[in-house]
Image: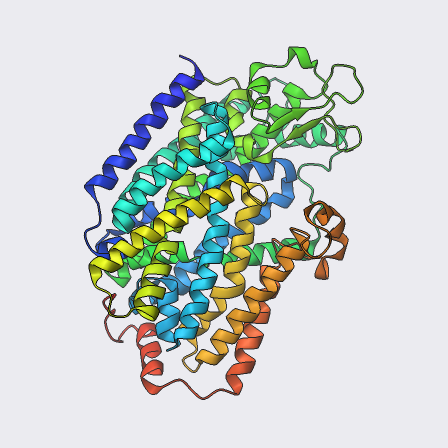
Amino acid sequence: MSVQVWTYILVAITFLLYIGIAIWSRAGSTRDFYVAGGGVSALANGMATAADWMSAASFISMAGIIAFTGYDGSVYLMGWTGGYVLLALLLAPYLRKFGRFTVPDFIGERYYSRTARIVAVFCALLVSFTYVAGQMRGVGVVFSRFLEVDINTGVVIGMVIVLFYAVLGGMKGITYTQVAQYCVLIFAFMVPAIFISFQMTGQPIPQLGMGSTLTNGSGTFLLDRLDGLSTELGFNAYTDGSRALIDIFAITLALMVGTAGLPHVIVRFFTVKRVRDARKSAGLALLFIAILYTTAPAVAVFAKTNLIRTVSNKEYTALPSWFRNWEQTGLLTFDDKNGDGKVQYVADTATNELTVDRDIMVLANPEIANLPAWVVALVAAGGLAAALSTAAGLLLVISSSISHDLIKKVFKPGITEKQELWAARVSATLAVMVAGYFGIHPPGFVAAVVALAFGMAAASFFPAILLGIFYKKMTRNGAVAGMTAGISLMLFYMFKFKFGLFDGGREAVPDLQDQWWFGISPEGFGSVAMGVNFAVALLVNLFSPEPPEEVQQMVENIRLPGGAPPAEPH
């Protein structure tokens, strides 16, 4: 059977599975909708958290960006994995013990302020919509190639599917759907990696294959071969970095602390029964995540080596079928500038004739390696599982922020549970539509879009959550001022240097790199904005009255093992 037929079969099976789970686990109360009834096991929550965490950026884009940036791409590996450890050890157990539905709920209650809650909702919506844009873009990329529809149509299809199980099942439906999606995405990522590792190096373990010698009898190590191919084409050696050290540090830190402030990941720890289960599920999730994250660098090396070997300086008319397939999507283009009929893939942009969208590398990798059609289709199903699992979690954050934190807690406190559940579902529907628009008009490739979301989470939530847990005298005035300053600075920097809003528009952005403050890119500026958040919050705190005694006692309780038991979400 062809790749397309296999894709239809595997995608249909997985979509029916997700829809069936959503119907089986549909939410009947707000507690089911927001936190899955608070009764999810540690194992199930660990798998669901891993799926929620490993988005299209992890599955589709991360290996692609490492393939094209080499050593510099390691910032994504270090930042995202390190950030998860930070979240699991430093924040998750305490937030679970506090026992609220959402991050804005925690901030509103901890800082005894409607204003703090509203600012937190605004930040949650910004982070979630930016993040979900990357997921919908990933869905569109998968559909455009494997189901041979344009990217926009693919985004719409993804919207319909995720809307169904997010609106019907809420967190309960999303949780058990994400368990299935984790199984699909990890199998889809590992199978081709194992195949290609054995094909290129004779080593079935991809992590070891990346550092092994090639099977062609030359005795050359795979990474040495890739370094040689890269330098021959005028690029930096693959294992050397070109990014400034301060930018590497800033991006890594922004991704780490942004992870610890991501509302859709934090809310997962509210779904388990006990604080002990929150710790267990965090450890299990890290194990499940590590399987993919330790494999991604190997996939990047395999993909980049095979791309150069099969395309560079080859006759265009003799290129393999995978090239034509991806060329039809517009994500891979060849411009024969010198008219010799050969593909010149070089570092010099003036003579380079090949343009490759980074987001296709993982998806195209099995085709480039000439693997069986079912393996190619499996990767498509895995990419969709990764994108949809995270999109659903983000949409729930958006929905709950509006229905619970704004409508229930601010504007209409007397709303009934049935009315709140209806408002949550309407909010999710509207959020899907906005997410679809951002997926059709994304601000960049998937990993870059997601990095901006992490920067905004770092600039807004992380200081407020950290100080809220570990500094009982932190006041509402300080928290609100810090969050406002951090997110405002991050938005200004992002719009100025990512979109050129103040400098002639998006086409001017490449010319603005020399003007980056301290040499830090927009993806890393969340670190600076976070520092400003901390500074402003603590400064304002000096001139503010202390929090009420009951608030200080509440903070003591969530940090002490012998404190009060977890509060029931309400």
